Image (cartoon, rainbow, N blue to C red):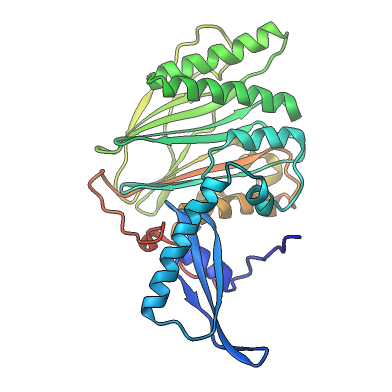
Length: 352
């Protein structure tokens, strides 16, 4: 039986947020004095867990350095062995998933966070009770970062299957080296063929992006989706982005892309319309983005989704999904890490 540990501002949450090892005060255990060490288990910014060790003596600097390296190594052990077992997946779950949600989870990238020298990217999906149409995805190459967010219309398994078609078409095209426009066209063809062949009116909205990591130029294709937000110099605005038709509406839809030059310090936030649903109309999303500016994208995406959950009384009528990108500069930016995360980019301590 797994024990659920709350994120209540205590040592475990502090270690996850700060990505720094923490040594607790000495305790008496069965008449012996012991020290508890918590170390983040992280790979490229993706939090896998926290390693807890109980030691019979107070660790010195060499000891903590070795424990930090061991925790980082453990991350790779978990990743590799996760291919052979459901154990780690089971340990991360806090509730059973419906069939549609199970399909939806398989569409998401394995790691939800990715740190590179020039950027940090993190996504969060908060599922509704009977909707399973939201997805996000990314792929990192040497000089290029692809990212996408999409929302399949419908409910349950039907929405999950439509999302599967769309994501699979996008991934297949990307892996064949297709351009951003061709990826969009192929996704449109796949969703449209399925809909017409089965007498359905399914469609998918989406945003596709391609970032040149050397120049910071972001190319975007908007397929009828919610426009992204850009936080720059303390201000948050909506990116002026013309909208093309969603995937699956018509055959042979022509898609256009728009360029945006990212600047160091920019934060780009992509969302689905579940973040804007009428039950959450009292959420000021631009203000929420400003309020989470000091957080690592991993915690920022979570905080933005939590704001909608709180506003709806944890009764979402649609999936709420966030994809958060921080841009630091070109590919010559240095990422400093010895244990899976750049602590200079980590979130600060919790309030209070």
